[in-house]
Length: 396
Image (cartoon, rainbow, N blue to C red):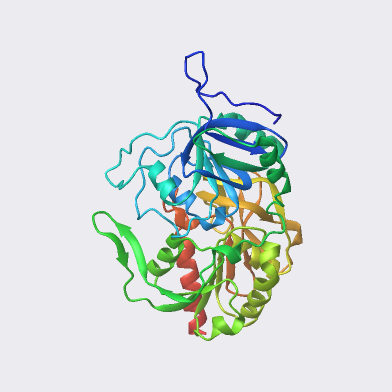
């Protein structure tokens, strides 16, 4: 994009209102709009998400650490916000870019408006942006670094903001798992959500599973518990000994943000040790990427990444196509995988590797988010596949 002033949804009057928020890109582009949420500023990678629903889950997904999210669906916030639809209590996303203003919530589950929720979580947002033009730019030129800033008086030091955007190093080579992981080990026993009953407690778990938290979403842990797992969550920096002292029947590698090669500096040696112990292993998203690294593969930054809830993925073991939810800016390079690893899933958008498995051990992973349920339950079988691997392993 070239330097410009955004004028989407301008009022009919001859006089433009003072812009209370700006998006400033590293190339000098300036987009002006209306500020929402908290006043302040943040720098990060500007990406886009094509989901029509689930904006609160998206904003609280730890995998969005370091990113400012452009929502392509024009009307975001109309169902409000509530304390149940969060994926973690610590918000990792740095801001949101919207097309239309937020209206009063219209859902019976809402406990507050989305604007109030943004403010309560110290998140910065801007509306009145031509999100279609911004999305086209990201699609063609890649995800840029940028600053989102909200000032009620409309006072901005644009040259300083451009300088800040240019100086930000970007996600390539950045370990963000250390910023979003849990600080200490804890036990998880929460189950699925039920109408009028809220979240249920998991009943009679059969197998002990250690989940390594690189930025885990709560709903992944719920799905593991609902599949029969007694889940213990350990920090991303946990050693092999930290994991094994819980005597797990299986190990789960969670989703998370940042460059897998950077996080892999300390995580990959542990994953290699766990593979050598013949433990059943299941990885999602960042966990999938770091599993590939542990198996000898390589990862690379994508041009614009996959972020949305309508991505078709084919499972080659069944021949079925799943509609998946995705959020990743790095990918596993297919040609780098060793012979003992088979590609089990691929994207029908761009043929990206979406799943892999070892041929000789009960170890597998997927790039997408089976717990997010856009299908709605197209991919829940993966949790049961993990549990089946554990049951077979215990019989041996």
